[in-house]
Image 1 (cartoon, rainbow, N blue to C red):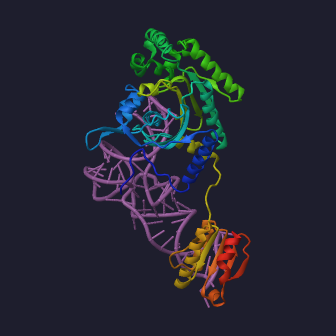
Image 2: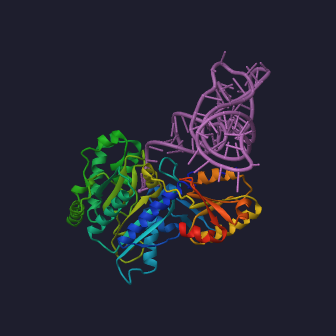
Image 3: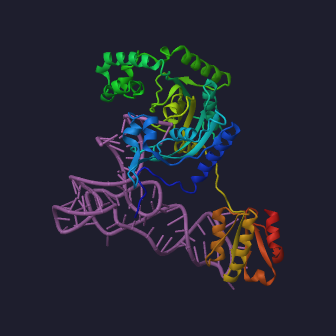
Length: 416
RNA sequence: GUGGGUGUAGCUCAGUCGGUAGAGCACCAGGUUGUGGCCCUGGUGGCCGCGGGUUCAAGUCCCGUCACUCACCCCA
């Protein structure tokens, strides 16, 4: 038997209805807030991700599906969406007509990690980006949209965590201070953090090893090292969140694993996913578009883990299953051909009709009608045809009535 | 890449001391010549993850391997 690839999965009928519901809700919300859909390719040149996400990140170093195409050019299955959206913005000079753009995109991403709960090698993200706005209110709008979406999907166990990472002005100074602190306390750090403290000291901040957490108490806080401009930005974010009644927690240890983030970062965390508690995350990336060769353009955005969201939304799911409006039970080959014509006609009218293609007893057809949840059943046998009529049975009330054949199509359409 | 747990019917799982492979649910059929849910009866469905070893005999014991899963790591 051929099995699917490790870390990949099928989304089967029964689960897919929930995915459709989430997608529908998200699209409606984005459109209400002025976001336009953008569809970007699944593959890009490898250098796009190396430049944007950062050569030294885990994603680029060891998680990307990268391979040479038939002419030897290195291409990569996208591990995230923001890089492509920026590339597209630059390539098509979307800033020319209107420098301010709001985009959303939904689709699969690929990272070759060890699979576990809420983490797959092909996973889906819902992304939103606001490009061309440096106002903190853009960051706030994104967080507001996120929480609104979760609320509309009846996901309750979520909390917003925010932080600021500073900018090229103030972050280097903080890194120096942090490195100094780490050097003095490196004896108590785990082996990973000892390695990280030179290459990417910010990452030590969110290490989960208990020894590291205690060692890091008293570590310098990025929030104490923000330059005046970054500090003002962060203050406005907090103030605006309060003004629109969005509860949040400032988490000075919240760090992002992608190099392009600046200033505001945020994460929506849940207690229902075990170790993978981030159901959405994002932040500002003011330097990225310039770094990719575009004009100096501020931007901010987020990504929602669709699979993770589906998992926690599933806890509160209502029944999305579709049931047929009518099930047609035909007896005999001739009658089956006749009702097949009716079924096709009703399908065009938007009436969900179902029937058996094979030769089945009436009893077994009634059982199937019941299993499918059909609201009514049309019984068409030789006895009925002889009398020029068919039987319509209401499955809830068990009441049956006779309908003249020439009125059937019209009758069903008007009843449904 | 590193650990732990689990692999037996479509699903959830039993399987004793090593002795012919089981249940519930689901599915199909019959009980009712042409009427669903409940009930009764019967039926379909298994390389017991895979490979090797011990043994008269292995689902069971031993070794290896693979898969799934949770966690580390990382992230959405």
